[in-house]
Length: 496
Picture 1 (cartoon, rainbow, N blue to C red):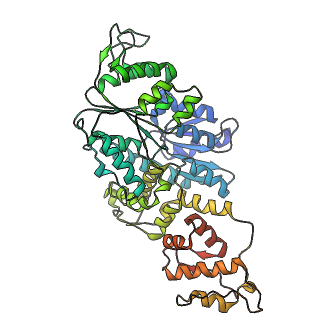
Picture 2: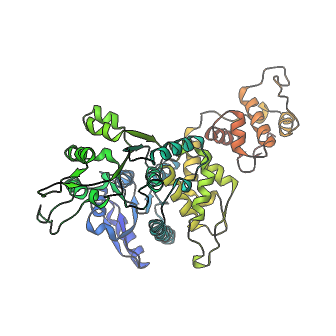
Picture 3: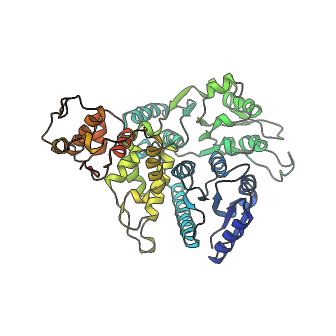
């Protein structure tokens, strides 16, 4: 039986209706009336039993978007189905950008809600299996990192040089770009490849436990210390210690970390003597540590100790050419053959074009999750735009929200013979004047050029955008304005 479903809604009537519906379907339900109570529940001991969340967006205090943002910051990875009485595209875009799994509009039918939760639990179960499989995997090397991007290959060459020594490394980059993967490749390519690789997320440790978790403690050192704990530094002895989100460490702990880095010694809490450790230290952060130094939030001496060999991992939006390779890599890792479903082994060109046009604020981690969920829920053997509703809502929503307030050319502005001329791939001469001898509008000429490019490059939108010298997002916005179907590469609305 799956874990419980957390219902978050400030309306007591709506909570009771949702609870009755979900309990009828056999789910155990935990109802709360606001965002603050929901976050407290998720961070309590009872939070581990929650498998999915039904979240209202419009609430006093911390609203639904605030809950989603807080969950992302605290790395609470539980699927969320959001619901609201306001189903505009801007609401959908905001919810999906902040990590919602699915979206329903009030009043949602019980069957629609049941399907959304069942899909969320199905994906969550298979993601858990995949994570366990990764943990059981072998040593990672640079050959395991999927990339064809010149920018990323330059980063990997820099990392390969670092793997030959024990020099302290600081890996910088946005959340989700693969900083830990680079760290594991460095360890897996060096002399310590067969030794322990210990990971610590400094931002996820309660502040009062950071020192004990990193450096260990003696039995009876503080209330609750019923037995001796070695600490992560000792656990990583002879191997590699990866301190992720090191910018979140409290200042008082930074002092002890500096000593450990300089002298190779740690002081367990309540201990009477220091312990010698031999580790390779790799740190990572998504923050601007130099700015934190200037603001007094990070020790300057520690910064220079850690920043001996900096490596900056670029975001996915700066390496879009990697997306097709990453998508196929993630598709191959999805467990197949369960429930008689056909294995997913292909993705449509339209879906790839859509994925490449998105900016991926969550970077590779977000792409991996999107592909995994699409593959699990796909009913056929090929992924299409339909399997990425969240991404599709954001891509199409951003086009609608960013549209310039002007109408596309009318039939009177674009004579039929000009449309036919542009539709012919052999016609490469654009007329500067219309039938009355007046200079044609820029919009008129732009429409003709876009159509010609689509025909000439057989609807390959990435090539069309490159040849026209514009970004893919801009191209899709213009296609929307002129009524061009990006999948078919044809004009839906011809002048009459």
